Amino acid sequence: MARIVYAMAGEGFGHASRAHLIGQRFLDAGHEVIFAASHRALRYLRPYYEDRVKEIFGLLFDYSKGYVDPAATVWKNLARLPQGRRLNRTLFEQVYEPFRPDLVVTDFEPFSAWWAWRHRVPFISIDNEHLLLMCKLEHPLRDLVGRLTATVVVRAHYVGAGAYIITNFFQAPLKSDAAVLAPPIVRPAIARLQASDAGHVLIYATTGTREDQWRDVLGRFAAQKFCIYGFNKNAEWKNCVFKEASAEGFAADLATARGVIASAGFSLISECLYLRKKMLLLPLAGQYEQVLNARYVERLGLGIWSRQVDQAAVSRFLDRLEEPTPQGDRILWPDNDRFLDTLRTVLSRLDTRVRITI
Image (cartoon, rainbow, N blue to C red):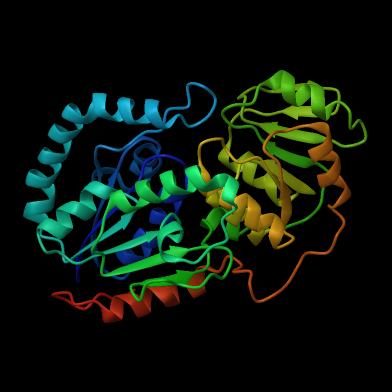
């Protein structure tokens, strides 16, 4: 039996859902696991694992202007840093050190990775962000500043992992022997669903878009029904049905949708691919990773993307919904079993005090 610390970033949903699935496999294999999480990931995992989940200081993005503001993000986190350092010092001294982990797993959580590096505890990275550093990608020149900023952020998170398992939905040449590509994984609630077509287009409205913008654009497509999440309300307006936040309801509407309109976060893209749903992606301004995801989705024929929601983008998307789902070796379709096989291989090669199996 191994002792494992599993730490994850707190922004977004993908880190927590991935940690939930993989962490449960460690527990099922008989290992002792402590989770370290912040913000949304902390709230998500606590009901499942209670005292196993410890709070760690987590970085936050600033969306106050409707997009990720790099300067405001830096100042926001600097203002919280003194309190965060105290929180993490307590966590490390009262939890990590007495626990004496054999392995630290980090899903883009920097502080646990640096703790492991300083204390010579083996650690591995499981995330999608290290794609920017460790894969050869096609980057348009116009996005050079965003690309460089995102690369610096990823590089600053941590170094020295025993392995970097990069979840991704397309093949890309690797630049490091420490890295390995793996297909996306999806949470059990999605894996249990059967895809069908009930005729609606599902929308997840995110930061930076207003309800009146959506009404103005979508009202021009009277023949098409739209189910909209993101405004946390139950209401109907012409061809638009607004729905309150509900993980179960959203999953059910996703499984039965004709297509999906949303930002370009990796987790939702993975779920759309698993259920074979075409996408219109609206990457969040200031998040280069989302721009990159959106470009590759369109390049692979899995959907289209636009910098803003407008009539032209929605019209182009609806026109392409009946096109056949693309195939090809370059697409890495979500596959939980294949991902776990990759993880087993990585674990078998690690130099740890005890053998770690799942």
